[in-house]
Amino acid sequence: TRPKEMSAEVVDSNPYSRLMALQRMGIVKDYQRIRDKTIAVVGVGGVGSVAAEMLTRCGIGRLLLYDYDKVELANMNRLFFRPEQAGMTKTEAAAQTLAGINPDVAIESYTMNITTLQGFDAFKASVTNADGASRVDLILSCVDNYEARMTINQVCLELEQTWMESGVSEDAVSGHIQVVIPGETACFACVPPLVVASGIDERTLKREGVCAASLPTTMGIIAGLLVQNTLKFLLDFGQVTRYLGYSSLTDFFPTMDIKPNPGCSNPLCPKLQAAYQQQYNSEEALAARS
Ligand code: ATP
Ligand code: ZN
Image 1 (cartoon, rainbow, N blue to C red):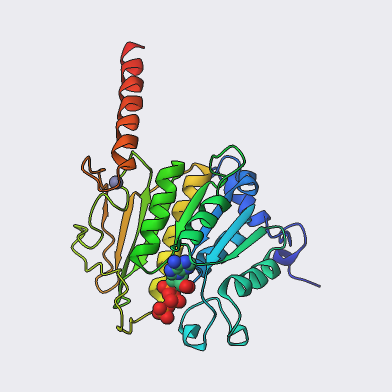
Image 2 (spheres, helix red, strand yellow; image 1 turned 120 degrees about the vertical axis):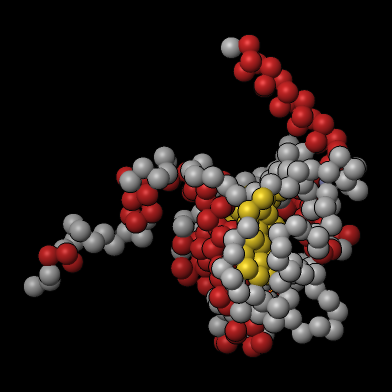
């Protein structure tokens, strides 16, 4: 006979029951809403693949995956991909593994470079619905270079779409996540990305000819922080941290708010900043009157 704790009424084999427990315990109001959410993960490498797996296990409704690269044996010091997937495109390999983990997730894979002219248009079209508005709830940037981040920034300013940026430093021992809400927070063009006043070395630019270090630990932690804040954002619990750094050498987690720059080099940004300010001021005035 099975021990009492193992009886069917205690251990539910439904994979969603542990997630629904979040609701019973009062952490999340309506967990099922996650089934209606769509997330785009741009860059299915060390951070993006793990973030996609976490979202899949959490029962996200739809995942859009973007990458131009193939799985290599050299990627095996990271989590997620397996040696037998070497040679497959990262999007194809990820779609295969994720569908095996949770077939309820609708997966769209886009094997493309988002920074080319056609890539930009195709990327923007893939996240836009027939009315010209965004069809995704959030875009996660898990790329490793400046141009790709600037491309995501441009699309998100054009669609007024909230996104989260992530990065791991070249020496693999620090990283960060940053929430970008067009008009409300700094966009990626507002502040030079290398001079973030966090006190930690944040060299997230991929330099030509430099063999960057990478650790599955740091990448896994950054993916975890990214998806944790994604869940809070989607399901409206706790507080979404606007900027969260991670320095593994001292276990230092700096947080901050980065204000938008009125002199931002992207002309769309100051326009959205003005619109946000106007909205904010009218809400304040309304609150003062009541
Ligand atoms: P390494 O450079 O260390 O070998 P990597 O290229 O896999 O690793 P990661 O930091 O693990 O880098 O992941 C970043 C991912 O983002 C990569 O899979 C890369 O192909 C993808 N990526 C970067 N730029 C673009 C782009 N412009 N369009 C689509 N995917 C991109
Ligand atoms: Zn800006």
